[in-house]
Structures are given as C-alpha cells and as structure tokens.
Image 1: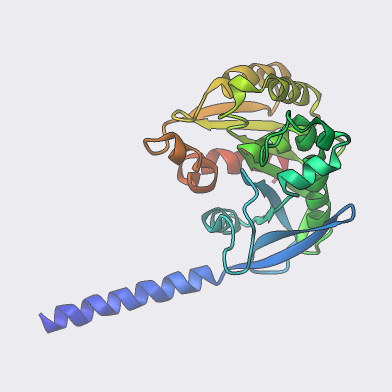
Image 2 (image 1 turned 90 degrees about the vertical axis):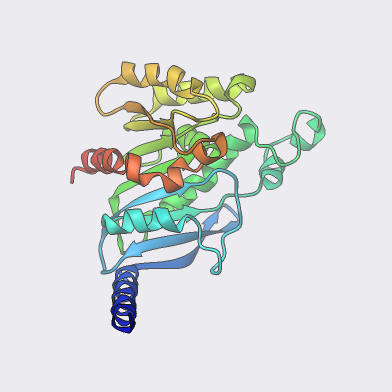
Length: 271
C-alpha cells in the first residue's frame, strides 16, 4: 500500500511538473494603449519566442476591469498561444464615458439607461477597438499583416461595426452578437446587417444552439451567404445546459469551435 501511495505521488508530481513546463510556454502581461486622449488597459498572451506571430484581438462582452491579479480569459489565452498566436484582450471606455463622448447624449437622458450601450456608444467604442488593433500591430512580436478581431456578445457587436471601417485586419470571428437584445434593438440589427454588407474582409459568425437567441445567425447568416468566399456562419451543439453557460462559449468552448476557427484564420492569414 505504501509503495502504491509513493508511486501515485510520483506520478502526480510528474504531472504537475509537465503542466508547469507547458504553462511556461505562454507569457502574459498588462498592456497600455492610447485611444485619442484616453489611456486604456489590456492584457497580452504570447507564445515563447520573438515572433513575429499572427495575432487575435479578443473583445469580451461587458468591460470588466483587467488587472495583473485577474488576467482575463486565461483559457482562451492558452488556446491561442498553444497554436502559435498572440491574444490581446483590450478594455474600452466605460458605458458612461462613451455616452459623454456622444454629442448631446447627456441632454437626452431618458433614452440612455445607465450602464447600457446603445448604437451611438457602440460607434464610439469602435475607436477604442481600432486603437487596440493599431497598438497590437506596432508590437515587434506581432506580424502586422496577420491580425484578426474576435468578439463575444457586446464585444461581437463592436467588432462587427468595426468591420465596415477602414481598419486593416484579416478577418473577424463573431460570437453571439446581440443575442440577448436582438429582438428589442432594431437599430443594432440594422447597423450590424449594414456592416456585414460593407465589410471588405471575411467574417465567421458563431453561436451555440442554446444561446439566448439564434435570430442573429438566422438573419446575418443570409447576408454572409450572399457575400460568399470565406464569409461563413455556424451554429454549434449546445454548450452546457443554460443560456448563461452558452454565453461563455467564446471563452471556454474552444474544444468545440477551435478547429474551425484555426482553419478560418489559416485561410485569412494565408498560413
């Protein structure tokens, strides 16, 4: 029995050492970039080596603060760095700060609930996203010609709105854009539809079957099909059993969508 215990502990120690060695292949660090007169924070995950590596900017839903002690989406960072990609997770200005940036928004008042981002604020948010892309492309360890943008939820809305602008990236990976608000925000629906029509680079739209609503895929997939080429969409099997778990699909569901996303990036990056 004692020998079995010692043997078991030896295997455990070996496994821990292997995990530690594997983890050391990925480094993570805080980053700071400018968007106009504002300094914003982000977090960079990168593989070992000097690069330059292809890279993905990932826009989370919401705008939870990023700190050294609470790195964002570490599972996603590991997924991309294991594949030889840099992952940059930037913040944007808060909903209240975005509202201040929109002319006349404070006078309207009643049309803008605290903490909620509406179309005018999303439009301003794209400036922060574009600034994050520009900063990332300027880093020596990043291949500036192989940068894509991904987003989930509200981050996906911002990414889609950016896709129609003159920001040089290779493609967009869009998870569940406005899935919770699709039926009540026609202005966002129209804006995202228009953005897809105007986008000059490929878009991959993704949702899990148990998302809050599959209406985004049902409507926007038609637009992507009309564009053809590398533009595509896919609804995956349920992720978990609740809408809340489905909302984590982009950050925690790489075992399901990973192969398809890496294949899409390989095509848009010409890897």
